[in-house]
Length: 121
Image (cartoon, rainbow, N blue to C red):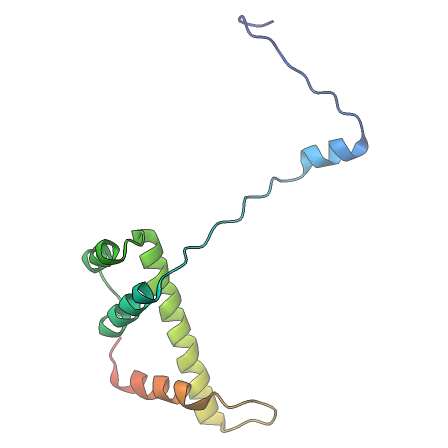
């Protein structure tokens, strides 16, 4: 006993227990937020109006959708990254033409490429 506390010791029985005690602990898997259709539509509409919302706009989206601000922020980051990749693929296909063995991206990417020409970011 030290300072009125009882010391507890755990006996290690095998090599597996010893190895397990040195393994890094895994973090529990984070749960994802499932968005309703109306929430996604509202976020998409906001993105079309302004892909780089300020804190006030994000806060207003939080109030409207009840999605935490952190998740709203991350949604916009992911959406901008997705938009950029669509644009880059469309530009590459347009520049190189149809490559052998490469499936066409279709009209969706062409629309994104066209849209990017006229938007200022």
